[in-house]
Amino acid sequence: MKIQVQIGPVIEKKTPCLLVGIFEEETDSTWTESIFWLTGRNLTHIFQDKEFTGKHQETLLLHMGSEKACLRILLVGLGKEKEITPEKIRRAVGSATGLIKGMKVSAFAVDVASFISEGASPTDISQVLGEGILLADYRFDRYQTENAEEKPPLIDYVDFCAQDEALEHDLLAGIGLAQSVCEAVFFSRDLVNEPGNVKSPDYLAQQARAMAEKAGLKCTILGKAELEKEGMGALLGVAQGSVREPRLIVLEYVGADPDEDPVVLVGKGVVFDSGGISLKPADKMDEMKMDMAGGAAVIGALLAVSKLGLPQRVVGIIPAVENLPSGTAIRPGDILTSMSGKTIEILNTDAEGRLILADALTYAARYNPRLVIDLATLTGACIVALGHEASAVLGNNRELIGSLIESGQETGERLWEFPLWDDYTELMKSEVADVKNSGGRPAGTISAAVFLKKFAADYKWAHLDIAGTAWEYKGGHYRPKGGTGFGVRLLTHFLQNLKD
Ligand code: BES
Ligand code: MN
Ligand code: ZN
Image 1 (cartoon, rainbow, N blue to C red):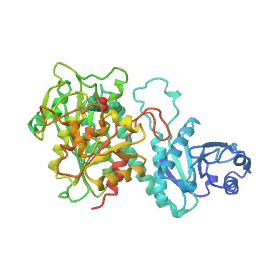
Image 2: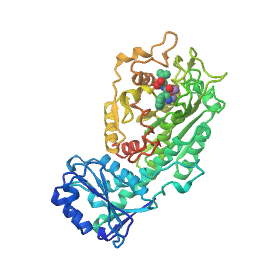
Image 3: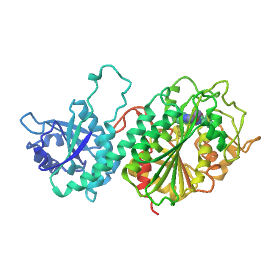
Image 4: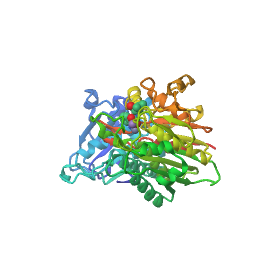
């Protein structure tokens, strides 16, 4: 999709559909005036009869007749102006984009000024509008070979219309940011949506390498022999049930002094999680192809930072494995020796994510990181606690957690902090090894973080459990069903705002 800027009288724009944002408290008269100005018609009754009031995500389609340059106007409610947030705008235009696609048109226009409230920066609004529209127009259909004509067409281009020429530069800047970040989100969504038979650990590695070559990132891939040499017994333990060999993918972006301590991002890359010998139930096991969404978010974030040319040094580490039961798989009761030297008693082979993260977190220390953030679809317990509305955040540094929560608020990829009090350490104590890999039912998300904390030694660290947010089940506003790309926009925003 192309987004371009058009300066001139908005209503004279020749377009199949003009999208206009309406705030809820716009009074009868301001509403009537703005609509009269746009349509040349007195449509007061729509407002008086409460057919449309501007409530968030409410929509109303006005047909203008073919004698007008603008064939349709779609009004979308933004809620009360005082309560407006970037996320409300993303969701409103995301929903509107879905409706417009249903009109079988391949282009539309946006009345940008109608979305700008007092004090808002035009660049920010333009970025947010771009994100809502682009993210809503994503589709993963490379395996559907039939009835292509029944699908609504993707949008070819969108015009951001404004009267004021002085806005052009700002609007273009916002569009550029949105396009860079969304391209990275799409890359991440594609990886998550790809089925398990296609995405072996090596497939993930090759995708990362190809992306890195294009984006000018350094990419190093460790194979099984190298992982053995590094002593990554925890990662290798998970991998040993599958004939598809593990990889450790390392991506490096240097946008600052190469001697500067980097931010290290670690992402869980379990390409398929059957549970292993502690096999998961058959029902919905297919969903576990998304168990590499943390890794996909890290790969996407590195693409975004390189496209944006951020002045940072960032390293991405993605341990990629497949968790399958077989004659060579690890068993409950096994004891693994991790790269750190710490021994781990396996009580449940389905608690595999923390095992591969343990070695990746140990590996991260060699970069002397200024801080480490890991992302993982780690626990079902996180979905029980937060549903699909937020990811959990836990860590050992208040300031880092605070900045991440703030970035979550701004990007709509929300985080909610769980406690990591010392009292929880008990849950993971083993009788026979240094730590066990499952603490049972109580506080499942926290006990997983307690486990990780043992390996995230000596640096600032935060862990994001994205089990509930990596996959969209219903489909709505700017999130089509499937992989969401959660984390890419959050991490990018965090890195954009990171102060020295
Ligand atoms: N990948 C799963 C967690 C998960 C569940 C992610 C549902 C997304 C949706 C993880 O590897 C897992 O199986 N965790 C276990 C841990 C338990 C055995 C301690 C869980 O949550 O049941
Ligand atoms: Mn599992
Ligand atoms: Zn898993």
